[in-house]
Image (cartoon, rainbow, N blue to C red):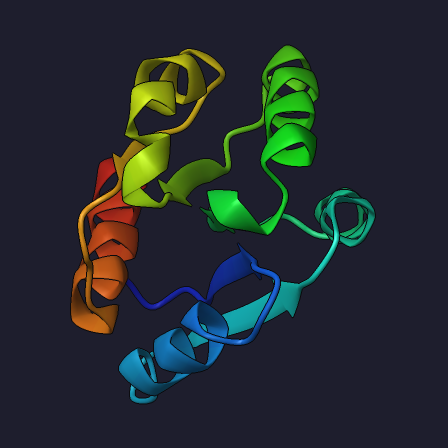
Amino acid sequence: MSEQTRHVIVFESQPFWAPELQRQFLDDDVHVRTCRSINDLQQRLAQQTYDVCIIDLSADLPGVLRWLGDWQIRGSHTAILVIAAEEQKSLEWHVRELGASSFATEYVTGIQVAGMCRKQWNKTS
């Protein structure tokens, strides 16, 4: 990883990915922030630039889809990684068309999600 500080924001209804990513990036210069509502996500993204935004699609499916549509119009360079439940798999291409860089429905580990973040950073380095 490069010497710059990386910023990750996680939208989820319950603490799961944010604390796991904090553990995964313990030895790296990565700041992980969490939010529990779409409004909070919008406010945080307006205040600061994030390298990666991880979204738990199950946290607010209709809200996430609306937000992605608005986010795409703005043309942000933040990579959007979506983690969805198996029953949401049929939404993958719609979510990707709205700007998601990655869409995972299978079980993923914290190591894999951290790897997905690093992969995005390598694309922009």
